[in-house]
Image 1 (cartoon, rainbow, N blue to C red):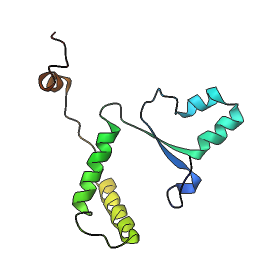
Image 2 (cartoon, rainbow, N blue to C red; image 1 turned 60 degrees about the vertical axis):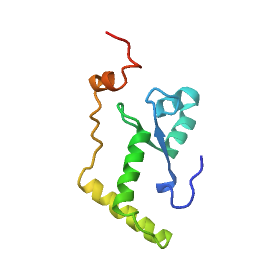
Image 3 (cartoon, one colour; image 1 turned 180 degrees about the horizontal axis):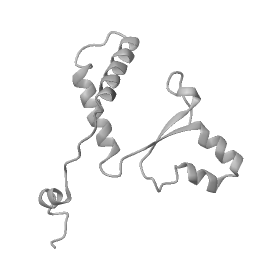
Length: 120
């Protein structure tokens, strides 16, 4: 994995981990490589663990939708302006501790997706 200029902090690549039991986690590196090499590899990545409930892809889509409504609803003249607008939006969302509010319960799923659930 490589980092393009400006995409990684301190030379670290950001790595989303969709499944905490997957091969792509720091502990797995120590199982696959000698300790010194595993440590070197683990230090190269910034691990981003995804939520246990709900899809990380849905969360990303939701954040992009919010971003679209807040600052991408008009033409952005250049890359620098885009970077500033996105950073300002990110600061606002972080300041207000914006979170995904997952309200789709198992009971709701059994009603809406009844063809996928066995009768109990």
